Structures are given as structure tokens and as C-alpha cells.
Image (cartoon, rainbow, N blue to C red; front, side, top):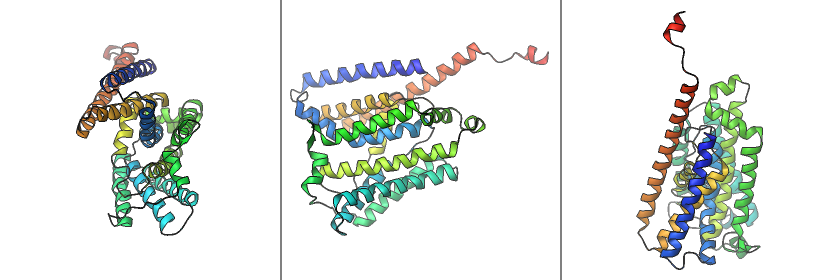
Amino acid sequence: MRNFRLRHETILLLVLGAQWLWFHASAHSFGTVDNTFNILRHSAEIGLLALVMTPVILAGGIDLSVGSLLGLCAVVFGILWQEYGWPPWAAATGSVALGTLAGGLNAVLIAGLRLPPLIVTLGTFSLFRGLAEALTRGTATYTGFPEGFLALGQGQWGGLPAQVWIFLGAAALLCALVHGTTWGRSLRAIGFSPGGSAHAGLPVARRIASVYVLAGCIAGIAAIIYTARLGQARADAGTGYELLAITAVVLGGTSIFGGTGSIPGTLLGVAAIAVLGNGLIHLRLPREVAGILTGLLLIAALSASAFAKALAARRATRHHPPPSSHSASA
């Protein structure tokens, strides 16, 4: 599986390069520095959600609620700043804390009560979006944020869009956690076999809970960046982001069944989706085309993951064939 993943990431890198060259040749403004910065700005929030979705899927879980939670945290930020007069940094802290608590709710239901992650996060997906719409009555939009806050999503630090530094910091942190700690290695073991991991003495429930709490925290941070980039907070913020994040993770080579995957692969998946969406806009193709192609990419990635798992199982059977009935009777 490791060799497959390396081959998968190499192929994805080649596909990404081909995408870039084709769009650059087809749309002259695509390869400019300004457009490259535009791609980076617009992919930061989805990239953050994809990064934190990687350990969730590695552990054999799923989180469909992160997009809705982003919307709820964005709305709460706007309310705390505009209606309660909190300074932006305090409102941002409150929003991230809310995201962390919401992730804790998923953790309790999944790790504590052992409910299926798909059903739990589908429920909290509706819960968080419903709360955001209730708080805004479906129409309120919070705007007029100070320039210092808007610089987080619209300005530049050190020659790069400001949110890129946050994204790179999150990528470095998650890469170190997933690939360089016992926490990350235990997630792979849990993804392969939760029961076997428990028998081996791993704290399965605590590890699973931690990935959902982390997902909620990162969703809160993504909400702040999203609000700063657009200059407004609305209940529909982050709509569909959970599916794009899952697509990027699986496209990057992480198995939807859990157990295998990498942060570098996820970064490539995010880049492939971001370049595709931006390139189609420059070609003036309908927005629906991006949705269709993204869906096809997800299906292809899922099929590749299932094929790799079946191939690995066949190789394992070939090298360790089951005992024959004759030897069993003997």
C-alpha cells in the first residue's frame, strides 16, 4: 500500500502539472502572479479542512459537519463583534472555542457512545447549519469589519497572501503529528483494525475523540479566515466545503476505508481541485462543469482506493494462503 501511495502521489503531481500547463496555454491570465495568489487565497479554507480531515479518515472515520460548522463559527464571530462589541481577536477566540466544543460533541457521540461517524456528522451537519440560519434568521449578514482584521484574508505577509502562512503552519503541524508521532501511527492502526488496536492496548476512544475535536478547532480557524477574505459573515458560509475537503483527501491517496494516507498527498489533492476550479473560471465555463469534474475525480479516487485495497488483499492471500482442508483435517 505504501508503494501504491507513492505512485499515486507521483501520478497526481504529474496531473497537477499537466493541468497547470493546459490552463496556462488556454487562458493567458491564468499563470500570472496575481492569479496564483488568488488560487492560494481561495483554497486556504478548504485546504485547512482537508488537512484536518486526513487524520479523521486515517482513523476510519468521516466528518460531514465541518462545512456547516465553518458557517456557524463565522456567524458567531459576526454576532460577537457587531452585536456584543467584542474586539476582533476576542470574537475570533470565541468562534474557535465554539468550533472546538462542537468537535467535542462529535467526539462524545462517536468515541463515547460509539455511534457511526457518518450518521453522527450527518446529524451535526444539519444541526450546525440550522443554528447558523436561526441566529441570522436566514437573512442577516455581518459586515463592516475593521481593516486590520480584513488584512488576514485580503492582505499579504512577507510577499504571500496572509492566510497562506496560517495554512502552511497548519500543514507543518499536522504533517509532524501524522507522520512523526505515536499519535499519527496509532491512527493508522485504528483505521486498519479498531478491535485489534484496542487489544494491543491503544487508547482507541481517546485517539478517535482527539481527531474530531481537532477538526472542530480547525473549522473555527477556517471560519475566521473565510470571514476576513470575503468581508462578511453569513449562514451559508462554507456550503459544500466538506465534500471538497473529502475529495481532496481521497484524491491525495488517503484510503476512505482508513489506515493509509499522507498529508503531502492531501496537499496535492487540494492543489489539483483549486487549479481545476480556477482554470475553468478563466475558460468561462459554467460553474456546474467544476462540480461535475470534481465528482468524477472523487469517484475515480474512491475506485482507485478500493482497487488498491483489493490488490493488497489478493497479494496477502497469495503469500499466505489459507490452510487446505486436507491439512486442517490432518
